[in-house]
Length: 319
Image (tube, rainbow, N blue to C red; front, side):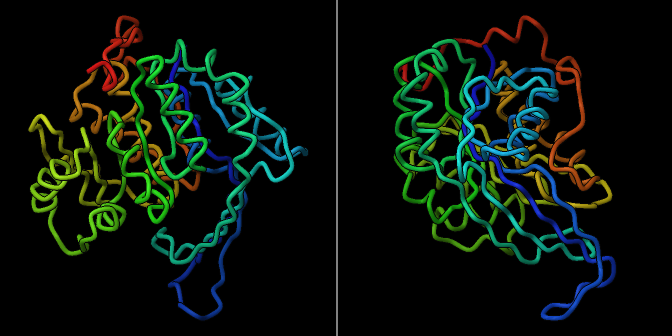
């Protein structure tokens, strides 16, 4: 059936400084508005590897919401379960410096009640034949709880990322049930109540192995921007995956694309290191442009064939 993605749709309003950014001052630049949201980005990234995911989310009941659905449809995202409601989408306002990095942002989260209603009405048919599940772990607790209940019922693996770690740290029980949890360096520091700002990938990799054993997290990946990513599993597999060197235009969506690659790889038979390789390649194509998503690829470019597209039924919940 495909990977089921559960998450938000946002409208991203982005301002880019065209000269050296001056904090607290006026900066000349450009402003653009595009479709965003972690869940929406992930769904479109997976679809752009020709894997036709199912997206569970909501949009506003207006022309902008309809535009979001139509674009997802064009990219072969299955939108049949999406709802059009008032306050269905969030808004993210961000300012970027001349290097393409976010220097300030404000967001308004959408109402998650429609998502919970979708799961109540269609949960069994959505999850029964899913290849795997991808979710923002900091979604409304009711949505998260129902998703993991269906995952256990139908023996499906859940891969999770985060957009607000201050909420996610209250979801440690759910993080322990994931097939893999992905976050960035700063978020990992919040999760484990430590400061990882000035350490090397090799140092963080050693720390991560110890922390996931203590926290009983099966697999975890931490992205480190230009320094690449580190990964570790409870089985003892761990390492550093280097980033690809590219010219940075806009880092928005790079983490979502990386997670999408990890999710794709683990769902369709790759090792965690191989999955990090897919994520690294997808992320590198996102930061080269002001778009939030990766360009189109064929699954064969990542060693995924028709035989891979029938994932193993094994799951964390089968133990």
